[in-house]
Length: 274
Image (cartoon, rainbow, N blue to C red; front, side):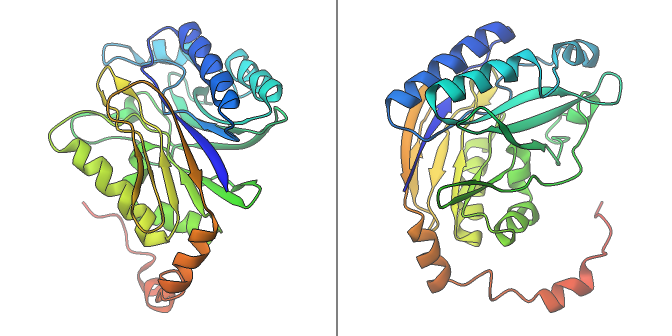
């Protein structure tokens, strides 16, 4: 078993306010017996449409900056693992990485993931402000949990979740800032269930609420059952994951073993569609 606290937050444009809220929720998760607290995308700050790329870049920090350092100190003090997100400096002017960090319960940064798939869809163009990452992150181990990280729009790309599953992930956590719109809650719920079902694993998806976001942070088990849906309220929800269920599900429904990689390989070099 692993106990994970899912944090559904309403980030403001003020970085200091968001850090204060994150530290408070981390302490609350500790008092509730959680081993991990998972925050949504854009924890550092809400970036409104009128904010320029230069302004967002000025808000960004390195992985060893003060925002992460404060979270590392909190993780060490509470003996809890933290999955947090930041705007990270990049090598290009006026472009930042949308970065997820796993901070272990000793305060170390155990893994860094930079969002692969930028949200250039539904009228948005994240590539105007962000730089895409170029690799998945190594899995993080916590007891029997082997955790893979994704971010938001990554959920729409089954290849990424499959790569994490093949690497050994039995839990996937996808911090998100899922934008409101026609059928967007239905898309969100469907994607999370699909990624869990097709890979026989847990999917945990903490989401932003308020501003332009949908809320409905979720946890789904390997059989597609919704364990948590937080609706539109801020706060924490604790979920217990029975990791033996992943092994049982993958034995009964051996999707990873039944793949036809011999056939897939012939099409691996197909170029992007229009």
